[in-house]
Amino acid sequence: MVSRVGLWLIAPLGTLALLLVLYNNLNQGRLILLVLLIVNGCVSFVPFGRPAMGQILPDLKFGSACSAAVLAALLILEVLFPSVMPGQYAQIRDLAKGLKSASRDDLRVFRVVYDNGADPAVRPAAFSGDEAASNRAWNVPGEQGEYYGYDPNGKFSYLNIVRWNSRGYFDNDYSQEKPPGTYRIVFVGDSYVESCQVPLRQTFHKVLERLFNEGSARGDQARPRIQVIALGHSGTGQKHHLELLRNQAMLYDPDMVAVMLCGNDFCDDSPELTRERTLATGAVTPQLRELGRHGLLAMAFALRKFNEWQMNRVRVSPEILQWSAAEVPRVEAAWNETLDAVRASKDYCRSRGVDFVLIYVGSEFELQYELNPGGALASLRHIPGIETDFAWDVRRTVRRLRDFCATQDIRFISLLDPLVEASKKTGKLVFGDHYTMFGHEVAAKALKERLPVPARGSSETTASRDR
Figure 1 (cartoon, helix red, strand yellow):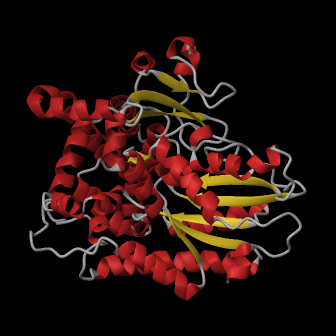
Figure 2 (cartoon, rainbow, N blue to C red):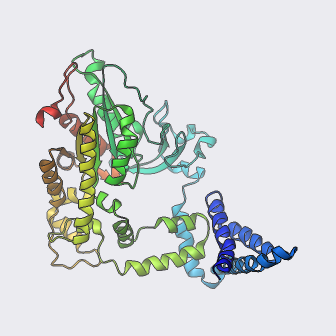
């Protein structure tokens, strides 16, 4: 019986393997289903042939017939979906269109295109068609992606051509061998370090590098040449950053590692909370995004309904619950795992004689609370699942990190206060989709003042003296 079940499973497992190959190389979902249906149909009609094969083929053909039936049903659903459920089809079709990147014709809506090459900004009219149809790969070494942004302070739309370096990061290429007389700072983090929302020249790490080296440009030899290297990947938490630190950051022989922590890292470190956050916010899940991209709209519709059913079971996003005055056990457990990863990163750096700094990027909600506490809390009451008498402690995350770093002897820098101060002083927005261009400038200036960089020839950094 076991052997027969194994033979039945050969065709479904083979179909699944072929599906993964085609799914990762083709965007035509219906064509993929049709090819798989034909393959399984052909197996179902193979003649028995030799007696030995006659004992095996019936079970193989049974598995293929089952696979073909499932594939046929899915293909029929995709074909009939527009006519049977036109309203729902229109909704999911529009959603799928919104998930796709803009075409080259969309370039005319952008006032500025940031090429991030030799010429940092060019007009769309000077942008060639081949470049406009660039590869939209993400984090692929040597390739490029496209980010469609809007600057709320300058009030203009722009296209940012994200050119990935040889390691798949949005930064210049730096040699692993550190040049003599150079002090290296490596930033490790998520999308705030990746910084693909703004031109490379205006990212906080490139602005910081220029600020540090202003004295050297004027002939001031008191400081070593500073190199600031950014290793950022979107959607990652501190567990990933620990591995990135071990496997990537140390290759550059850094003098300092600055790990940036975002307030949602504890969710990114927990698969359960990541999914809960996605459902609570009504965001598009990666699976739904892929189905829409492949044109499998009936399957995308079914997944959307399943996600909505799950969404009703999630009352509040765990990202918001980190500011609850009362402890939420699952949030606290996730935060503990995140801080354990930070502690391990610190220990790893110090065991190799590298200074370690933890930097908190802040969040738009925390900034709004500092500017208008009543208005920020009032906005929470409009979130489904939150009771009007819910007690909040919005400064809890910064306090948690500050207390943790004090007990672990970690230099801690919060960018929240400088961002709040700059917003109050100028009236400009520091948050848009992540930091705005102005926000990156504020962050760079704050880090310039707070990061300890030794004078040339000094054998002891400010960080080590402070510890």
